[in-house]
Length: 436
Ligand code: XUL
Ligand code: CO
Image (cartoon, rainbow, N blue to C red; front, side, top):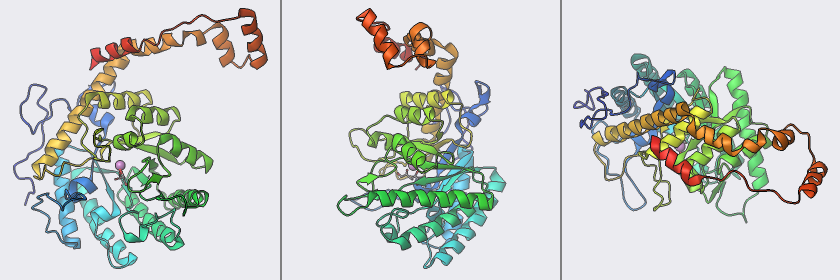
């Protein structure tokens, strides 16, 4: 029995279509700068929000109607839900999905029971992947919901919690490997603190590094060659999380010799919680050669918490895709919709509308970014702004031919400099608007 009997494969119908169950901009087979949109965007659906989200919030219980779900924690229900998820991925035309271990399978009374549950559902996931061709973008472990992780997992004051987390990640990596996952993500969850009076920050960060090194070592042992990601987020659920933004993650990875092994998985709403734009985070990661993947969503700046809404803002998607193209395109990563429909959007069909809107917004962002790059006007304007570095003094400084003493001598001789190269922000903004 189909879970979405009234929905067939979502077609591309072009910008004039009024069909809410059609793409107006995302044409998977359309080639944009040498690659199909499918291969540029590598869309991925998240299991946790789309198939486990209930609509609950701190003020009330869930609202979502999901007729296929019997509401039980049985393995059978989880297996059935997995089949429904693949019906959704296929009808949507999403080539990838992502999950946490505890999204797909119920936690048992012991670790071994949980592992057996995960295996039983992974068997169905594998069958469904083979049947549909949908692939796993990345897997991850939920190290934040169970009360045992109240102080965090890798950064817990309780060594037993570290050990349990390690065991859980080991299993999640094995399942990700078994399913051909192209990556594995670490989002800190509760890896941070609520209060500095009770926290040994240095020790906690060393433990987190040790934990990640264990994962890197184990990947080698089992032959998992997927990309590891760390996902920055400054707060929620804790007051401060060690992976607070792209720069903090890079610093942490560098300090503990993890930079060769992990890239960043950047999320828009996490960027804004950190007081940054997604564009900023992508530039920070890209400039360090660590731009791996994105969790595509958006926050609401008036609400200010992690609302995980579907992205529909064309400026945002343009900035994302401009950065992706600038830094060479996705390899293992993709546009992963870590987003949830609103509590009031309780009908199953809303899941389709939400993803179609996000995919169309990213398709437009891709095409706009590609047009900007092809035209070259913006890049040319940036280059002009730095023209003083292309020859003469600037080129000599860049080439290492100067030091403080030689520069002082030059400036003592000259006395003062003349301003050059206006920032031209207003013109830049006008030019951007010509493409959007
Ligand atoms: C939480 C979040 C996670 C990670 C995976 O804010 O973004 O869902 O993406 O653990
Ligand atoms: Co995320």
